[in-house]
Length: 318
Image 1: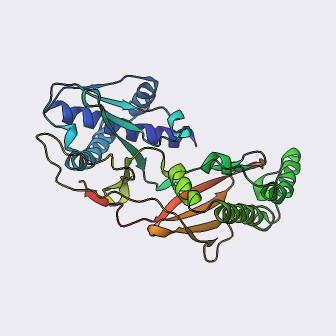
Image 2: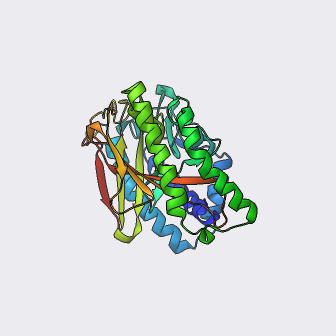
Image 3: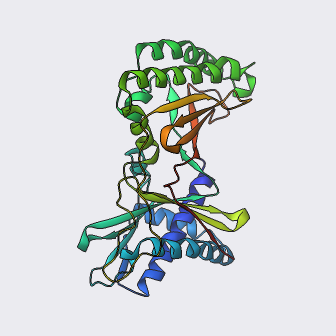
């Protein structure tokens, strides 16, 4: 990810952190944990003009007010001090996709927000000649057939890398790299699904969405909308308060148990679409993440269909 993208992400996280703090502090005691992630986000925030800061905070307030409606325990009357923190990026590698945490230690409760600015990707996973995606994604080693299938692809890329080639120099990267690599990936998922059945879809979605329930908060600047998606897969979101009551009730979503189909997006040579039971649908777009050829490629993974139990709320701001 570029420094510009990193800074935009940090700015967005910081805008939610300080807006949450300001609004919660009007009702109950709150504090911010000033960790390394906080200081990195603060530095990015301080590069903005005052008018930009105001715009970000107005945008964040629309999302924060809806989170309050969904989570009455945030403002529920109590003597304990509520904590706010930005998590380190390393947490994402460990399977925790939440960027901002809201914590009440007195009742052993926390929720998290995954804060995104103008993009809908859920993961940017890599494929490479030595990376066992099966082990990383769902805890089952890739088959010997998969390693045989990908070897000539990465041998070719290693050769081009040694020449100092750019991706634009390759005569037909779709035919020589993207399609055979996607075919190997597709074939491996189909094999493992036949062998291990209902475990594979469930574990894949848990890998893609993380091991904790969360709210995904997406800022869409062009429409002046904050979209909030609830991923309540384990029933830990949307708990009632003692005095505050939730004004929106969220259902619990179920994880998939079957792969219905995996195939190429129509008229595409770089994107697979995965259809699972229960309404789960994902796209996997393979791409090179650099100008020069390297022996790994990146997925841009997006949700293209969700169960009806994943509630999506659009919050407008002015």
